[in-house]
Image 1 (tube, rainbow, N blue to C red):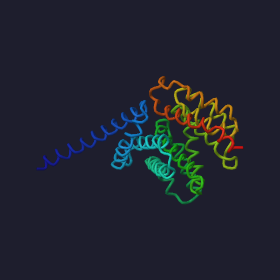
Image 2: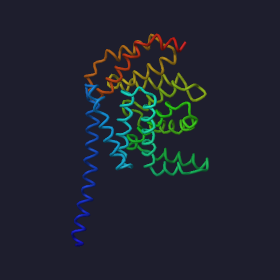
Image 3: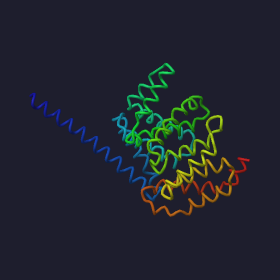
Image 4: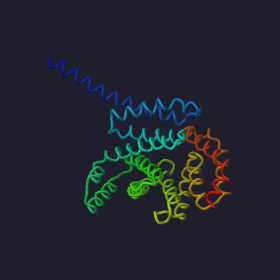
Length: 289
C-alpha cells in the first residue's frame, strides 16, 4: 500500500511539473503567434478566450513570473488595440497593475520593502531591492514597471497614483542602467513618454524627453512602430510641432509591416492608431493652442 501511495505521489508530482512546463510553452507559443497575426479582426474576436485562459493559468500559479508577464503583455496589448470604453480600460489597467505588483512581490527584497513602516528603513530597503536586480531580472521587472506606470498615467486624478510614480520611475531607471536596449529600447521610450507627459514640477523635461526618444527611435528603427507613434503623440504634441507630427504619422502609415513579422500585430495597431489620429490632427492641435 505504501509503495502504491508513493508511486501515486511521484506520478502526481511529475504531472504537475509537466503540466506547468506545457502551460508555459503553450502560452509563450500562443503569444508569439498572436504578435505575428495579420488579421486584426481575427485577433479581436478570438483573443478574449485566450485572455481568459491566461488568467486561469495565473490564478493556478500566482507566483509564476512567466505567466504574470504573459498576462501583463497580452491584456495590455488587447486593451490598447481594442478597448475604447474608459470603464473597461480601467478594468484592464487595474488587473495588469495587480499582476505587476504580484510579480514584484516574488522578489523577497521588494516584498520586504512593502512591509516596512519606517520611512528611512523603507527607502533603504527599496534601494537594496534595486541594487540586487540583475540583467536576467529585466525581462520580468520591466513589464511589471511598465504596467504599473500605465496604471498611474490612467489615474492621474488619484493621489495614490502620484505617490506611486517615483517608485515605479526608479525601477525603470534601474532597468535602463542594467539593459537600456531591452525590447527595442523600451526603457528609453518610457523615459521619453515620462518627460513629455508630466509638467516640470512633477519631473517633466522636454529636453530630456527628446534625448530619450532619440535613443529609443535609433534602437527600434522600423521594427517597432510604437516608438514613433509615442514620439508623435507625446513629444511632438508637447512642443506643438504639427508638421513634424503629421510627418511621423504618415511614415507609420506608409511603413511595410511585412518586413518584421515578429511585431506585425503591434505595428498594425500602431498604423491603425496613426490613421485615426491623422484625421483629427487639426482638432488635436487646436485643443493644444
